[in-house]
Amino acid sequence: MQPICFTILRQYSIWIGILYACSTPTVGYAQTPTDVADTAQIDINTLDNPSLISHANSQYKAQYYSQAIIAYQSVIDRGYHNSELYYNLANAHIKNGGLGKGILNYEKALLLNPELEDAKYNLALVRQSLVDDIEEISEPITSKVYSSFVFMFSHTTWSWTFILWLWIGCGSFVLFYISQATRSRRAFFILSIVSLIASFTSKFVEHSQISHSQNNIYAVLTTNNSYVKNEPDRRSTDAFIIHEGTKMKLLDIERSDWYYIRLADGKQGWVETKDLGIISVYMMMLL
Image (cartoon, rainbow, N blue to C red; front, side, top):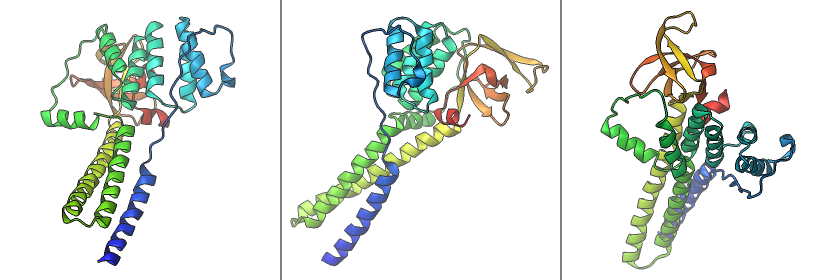
């Protein structure tokens, strides 16, 4: 019996190592707000990301919102994506009178971290000032429950949950192997199976969330208003008009100058890409 168990344990450990290597999330640094506003002229290109974020925080607290926006955006342009960073950028845009870009960046923050309560609150608050009052088409209850479960946590949290359950399962299997008492062996065996199921469920949910974000791309109107066209041409007839801050789903993104969009109430049409800000972080990396 011992050689068979040893072989199973060795194979199990190999798969654990492979899965761990494929799923370890990347953890970014947290911003460090400063209490002293630095209003001196600084060449932001010479600053590293933590220093640049600290500088942006200082500009925001000194109410130099335009400078704060430039600094926050510079960090993002360098390829760094963090929910707190987008949240701060959204606040700066709102303070600077940019309703559409504020909503856009709140949405990005929540895409990266659905648990960011401050972003949820601020987004709900600024939406009250929108011109367009769009009534959403009711979503099937099963789809709502599934979406709520998948987006309960960020994909990073789901990834760490997968790793945690995987280690619990590994430990339980080892204890099952070395334990002598029948009752203990049975308990550890059941725990290892449950942990394995939980770990792969977490991994499935993580990949479902990423896939959903990649395949369901949304945008926000960042200009004062835009006439939605029936055809991707400025000379085409107007279908309807939308105003700053309106959120829409992108249905056709094959063209570089026009996107085919759908509003929450089902209305569809073509909008010029220059009027929109893309919510999806994955899409932003491709553009």
